Amino acid sequence: MATLAAVELRGLTRRYGERVALAEVTVALEPGQTLAVLGPNGAGKTTLLRLLATLLRPHAGVARVLGHALPEESWAVRGRIGLLGHEPLLYRELSARENLAFHAALHGVGAGAAERLLAAVGMERRADEPLRTLSRGMVQRVAVCRALLHDPELLLLDEPRANLDPAASELVEPLLGRSSGRTRVIVSHDPAGVLAEADLVLGLVRGRVALLAPAAEVDGAALRELYR
Amino acid sequence: MSALRDGADERLETPAAAALRAPPTMRSVVGALLRKELRVELRTFESVPAMSLFSVTTYVLFHFGLQKDTVTGSLASGVLWVTLLFASVLGINRLFVADAEQGGFDGFLLSPADRSALLLAKALALFIYLLALELVAVPAFALLLLGSSLAAAMPGLLVVLALGNLGVAAIGTLVGALAVRTRARDLLGPLLSLPLLVPVVIGCALATTPLFAVPAGGLPLRWLLTLGLYDLVFAVIAFALFDFLLED
Image (spheres, chains in turn brown, yellow):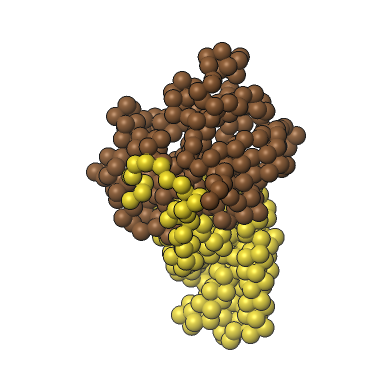
């Protein structure tokens, strides 16, 4: 059986008013592969993630995610995507356990998944405290649980290890790392770190594709050019 | 659990559990959203106490401003409903703030849940806030201003309050969702909701006037039907437009 691309973008364009945030981005990612999205601030990386997450609509071009066209078939991919962005998407007044129970209900998932994930990220002992009383790193660990609660096929990660100490990074590695077996799109400002776990590198500059190459072929000179 | 497993699989050739999972039912999603809503309100006390305090303060001001110990009939009805209307605007303005500021909208939109569940849960939450407001505001109004018997008016008043609350909940949820995604949400909320709520206040005030008259009269059926129809129309409009307000 032929394998469909997990992510297929052709001429994808997105504007905010007059400003072009993404211009004619074309890239394809096979299931199980990892795409590293690099580029300076304001390059359109977060916009790309939000488009793939169905939170933004493309203004031109073709976007297919998990075999479905966006935005027409967004309903078919919601619930199959896990987004871990700058914001944890959690309520500060609720505890980790309450937040995850809430998201589990939105996804039609049983409460057992939340308990297993809380244990996996080492948060079960602080799971009943309001999020506003937890450190940023702990909130990020809960956000990891939230993003994985519904067992997504595609992970969209924006600086996923932000605020995590080395021990916490190690805890989330089996969940977010290559060994999770999930298709991943990772936005990072740590090119050296993300290249080690990527199959494909997409470099964006002012919304345009400045670099698209297998990770193994990307060298220091190409990266320096990207951030010049 | 696959979230903890090792090793890749061919996800698009063998659809994963997420693809096969049935979408959550409307009832379970509305229940989860409403529980979350009430829990956050009980922990922050951002809406109901402000609405209640505003209404009691306003009745105190009317008590001294009108230079009357008691009011009856249309004046009593007008004072009660205009105050409840302004107090409800405070709740409408706060209805979606936690979702907008803490990423609740995105969290909800990333799920496969029916978008109408958010409308229903928010409208139910606003309806409950209004009930809580009226538990404080109506006795305060009776104590400070009402010249006729509240006990005698209560059965009819409960019907009018229920119809009024339905209208405010439908219009308030629609306007709250629209305003919260703009920069001027504190201004836009009242500017949009007050004109739309004028017919609700007119209907409620006219339906309540005979209840506060001396001697008290019965409920005017014509105004109850008008209120019911207005509620229904706005419930349908809110249902039809809500998805578009949430999308990019």
